[in-house]
Image 1 (cartoon, rainbow, N blue to C red):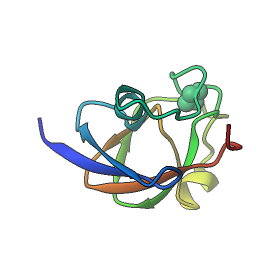
Image 2: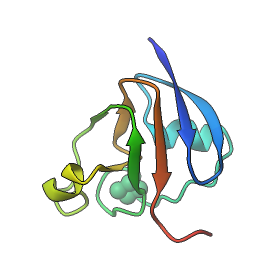
Image 3: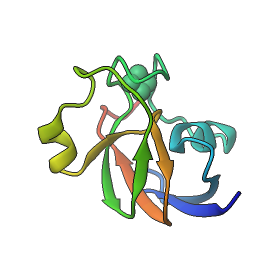
Length: 95
Ligand code: FES
């Protein structure tokens, strides 16, 4: 499985994320305090801005990520698998 470089805008860290893992899984494994709650695409706690790169979105609740949010470049870190190197910033309040 190919591994991609994922840059977390909030912390400036760049981590590895395999194409069969979500950005959230890779961030948590790397010790990053990425905001999340359900990790199943329903609560929108992990809502993030995809600054660059491409992701594949796993199934999610319609209310957690609306089509207009996707158009605006937003994504759910717990549902997003990398398809290229990417840069992402979480939009929740800093903790
Ligand atoms: S953590 Fe709940 S939608 Fe991602």
